[in-house]
Amino acid sequence: DSSDFVQKLITDFKKNPQHKVHLKGYLGSGLSIVAGHLYDRVARSLILIFDDKEEAAYVLNDLETLFDKEHLLFFPSSYKRPYEVEEVNNANVVIRTEVLNALSHTNRPKIVVTYAEALSEKVVTKKALSTNTLKVKVGNDLGMEFLTEVLTSYHFNRVDFVSEPGEFSIRGGIVDVFSYSNEYPYRISLFGDEVETIRTFDSENQLSIETTKEITIVPNLESQSINEKRQSFLEYIPKDSVIIAKNIPVLVKQITRNFTQAETAFQERKGTIKQAEPQQLFVNENEFLHQLAQLGLIECASTAYFETIEEMETPFKPQPIFNKQFELLIEDLNEHKKDEYKNALICSNENQIKRFEEIFDDIGEEVSYIPVLGSIYQGFIDDEIKLTCYTDYVIHSRKKKPLH
Image (cartoon, rainbow, N blue to C red):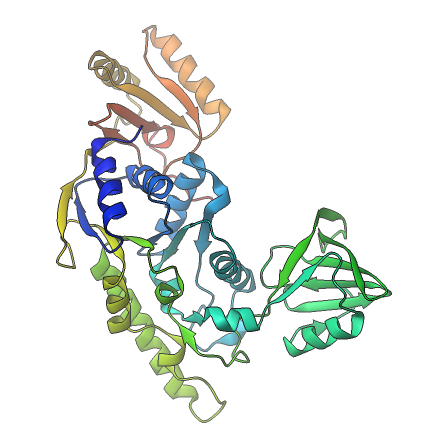
């Protein structure tokens, strides 16, 4: 059950979609629990924004451990440097397109985890996405000529065998196409002009992965050849979304730095190739702050950037550092048990669970705890609902690496 602290957040955001609150105090992975409960109960999209990709990846891991992955999305950046199109990360372009597609074609709200650099790049509008999306369903009367014409207009390259997004191939009545909206390519089998079957497949071994009834084929929306008007990601998301932001001054600094880099790169290339201007492709500081101000917002920092409606103290405390002193760990867990806390030891694998059992057996003391298989970024103590969540890697004094 959610605590009074979380329940108050839920009530406030249900009443007012543009509510703003400043959370003071330690959060750790408690932030992921707050976000998950808020998402479940408020039924609106949540956008979690962090300073950099590494921190965003840690929190994404937390959410994947604690909640259903189905409605969880990660929105990365696509460029290594502004206007260096050859350095675009193709895999990230696919992920960005998947996120835009998911936000446009579903009624179910999403949790999106992202970071400043990713938000610096503008995205196509929903209208442009719709214009540049081909929906294919089993039973559709399309025909090879039509498919070839559309894919060519989307700037897909025809090849013998598809291996990366933006390619298609034709063999007999089969069209293989690697859309920018999916991790794997599609194999579309035609019987005459009718779509008979659609399946995803592995481009390396050509083996089928799964069949599907309907797909969307989307070109590279980050490409300069898509000339439609662009907007910021914060304009693209549903208007009733709630933003959870870590350290807004740092986010603003990153947005400004990226925009300045884009301006410099544009000036250096001006006249050589026709390019869209920085303000068309990148978000500046004023845009970012104006858009944040229009949305529901939870600030997580020692000092609030906006004049918030409400200030709330979190009920969380950081996990103690035991430096492999397991007698201290046992003492701590048993003291919490006396005070009617539930103790959870979060272990990244089965071996770690067994290791704790062996250590406690060797010391010869009864220990009250629940082993939980999973991985979270930062342990915490929640004094309100009386819960300790300790991570194995902190107890063993190791550094945790994000999975993404």
